[in-house]
Length: 186
Image 1: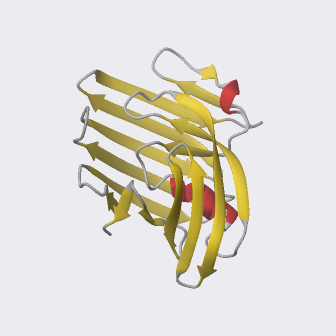
Image 2 (image 1 turned 120 degrees about the vertical axis):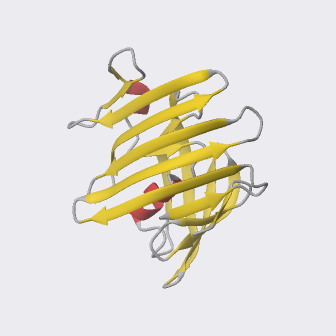
């Protein structure tokens, strides 16, 4: 079980992660009390190569409930369903990873897949970014550059929609500290 809180303690994320030879399975919850308060429940499936296969999101806020099922089908196409039937999402076709905007955990996906926490390297990626609580999906660019890495973890410079930050990463590739967003509790 991993858990993060925002710097101002207005958001909490907890996720149960199961790692097997078949990949990664995660189920998490996010609660935010700042601005327009909302809650998010999500499940995530990642294949053995670290590629996201499915993200299911349910959100609840003062504006109502929303849901999203986002799946990568064989052949690489992303299919999304927000309750009105599945549709191909050509705008995120280049993405291998997803980023749930209020989640520290999902920033770990590309880092783990590329082994950025093990060696000094860099990568520029297109990710399928999912808004919270609106569940809108769009393609965004994330740039990761490993500043330092050792057996205890890594420092990785992140540049993306949330600005430029140095992330602290543990030896397993999971985010420990994302400045301005989250600090890991457990």
